[in-house]
Length: 139
Length: 280
Image (cartoon, rainbow over all chains, first blue to last red; front, side, top):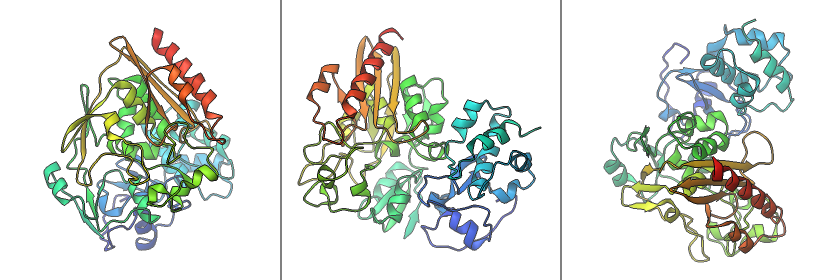
């Protein structure tokens, strides 16, 4: 994960999100709904966004990338420039999803952004600014 | 709880049943376990046991919705149903086999009310809130099946191959009765392995949702024209994915007070879908 290897000992049924937060102290990944609806817990596995709250950790195979692993991604600065956070709780998941999107589609259209980001809810309603942040992520 | 990871379908079948539950993408099973709606002594991770990928007209049951959505060889109706089915994260996780077996979104069922599907003696939705519920097949249970993908596959005339048999998709489903709450005919130790999906001349999937981005269907209408014959599959209208043989079948709907609004939506979408496949 994030270029490192960790050994953890947890019971079957434990979620990836719980291991990240409670075992490894990587609390950048947030848990909001805890049932796979909101996207706050999004991480990448081999570059593909997944919901860590409903992913059982024993079934994960591949390189996990969390928001901590994207510390130096240009999207972080772009979200700040666009003022794309309000309370900030959904922001880690937003950036993890956006990073996967721009890796596949470096110049996404507004429609691609709306489709690709549809699994990340923001209850503050910063969607227009998130869209701007992703449109201009390389500026 | 224990986790087993069999490497073949035969091995998986030997492990399933008696409280041992199959797990693939986990998007359905994990929340159900967490909510106490499903109990498992062991989880059988079937991802190495079930085929994944697309070979001509054959789709492995372990193929994800995200993989189907972007494959140009997949009929439009199925690609669109996959695209509209759920969020990007869920589409990247969920398998097509699991999608066919998903449980109802009925809030009474999800909140563990003692309804027919939970072995109880009534349908709480009929007397309560049921605006997302059924307009067909709702004599006993008024729940609505949420699978967009199943509607698309019904319209395409899909055949399933399981570890025990081959069957048309429609035969995977059964309406629940007062003495048997099952909505599928799949045995506890039976796995869907592959889907055989005929290529149509034209197809379309139209979905009414309560918001523009992913949501469960209010009404989903799939239409496909194969060898000159048009088939219709509907999502969100009955306790199981629903086949219409013609637009006249809509006259036989049995809407509840709260679901009556779905009927004109279904009529409009069916008319549009039929026009689309007549020329497409």
